[in-house]
Every structure is written in C-alpha cells, then in structure tokens.
Length: 210
Image (tube, rainbow, N blue to C red; front, side, top):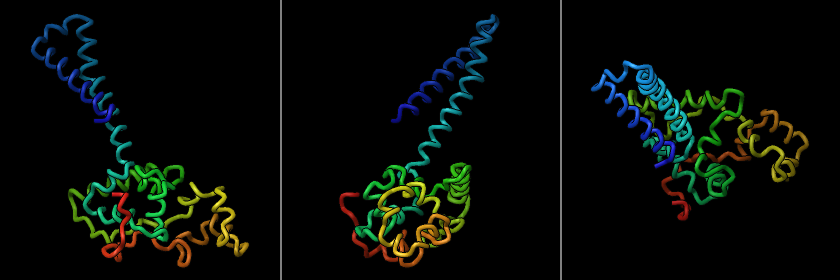
C-alpha cells in the first residue's frame, strides 16, 4: 500500500477516534483545549485528509495501470506490446521513450498551459460515461481533436535523432512544417501506425512485456 494511502488511513482513523471521544464525552469540549481539539478533529483533519487523498488519486490517475484498468481500454494496453517497431505507441512504450508507468498520460496530455487540467476534465467525463452511461466500443473511441505535434515535440524537439533524421531533412521544408504542426507526425508515410486495434488479434506480442 502506498505511503500516502497509509498516512490518509491513519489520519482518518485518528480523526474518527477523537470525534468518537468528543461524542461520548461532550463535556471534554468545555475548556479551551477541548474546543481547539474538537475544531481540529472535526474540521481541519477531514479537510486535510480530503486534500491529501485528492492529490494522491490525481497522481495515481496518471499511471498506465490506472488507464488500463478500464475494460474498454484493454486492447489499447495490448497494443503497447505489439512486437513491431513501426507501431508508434509500442515502440515508445517498449523502449522507454516515455515512462512505462505513465505511458498513456505522457502521450495524451496536451502540453499547453492548461493541458493537464484539460485532460483531467476529460478523464472525469470518461468516468461519468463508464459508470452512468454507455461506454463506446474500443474501436469507436476517437480523439477529441486531431493529435498535435506539440505532444511529440515535448520530448523529441532538440533530440539529435529527430533534428538530424534523414527523412526529416530530405526536404528543407519538412522539419519546419513538423515543428509548426503543418505536417502531422501521424501523416501517411511517416508515423501513421498508432493503436491499430483492427489488426491486433493476429499481431505478435512482446512476451517480456507481460
């Protein structure tokens, strides 16, 4: 169990114990010290526990395991194990070009000023649909907007393999077009194989990734 979770549980139990004492012995709040203790136990500690728990869960929501815990996303998790270097998510995941434990969040966070907040709001929408609506079939899941090169450049811009890549420099106009998002990294002929669920069933998977 994560340390943050243990701390939260301990604080909740302590707060509950103190509140229990105050309920069964209301006279203990007659003095100034009792009132301060009651205020801390009934207001400060619950608020602190709530904020600590919220922060802990926000961190957990960034993990690959959290994203793939949803049944709808299982095939997307399998696509990370496709034994084919042309599969973009698989090659990034298997070669640690993104942190394996935060693979989904690394590639699907919008690296703009409010990108993290925006993706969290999308996540809350997904939770709402999953529990109260009808989740779409995996193959019907679409991005809210076209994938922006900004998310790729967040890691790759400045890297020698990117800046000096033969394909990127075959035409002097290619690299500037990529950096300005005029030419998508996912364009046909470039990195156009992402989560290819249609051919996942017969695909060879990387055994060491299981």
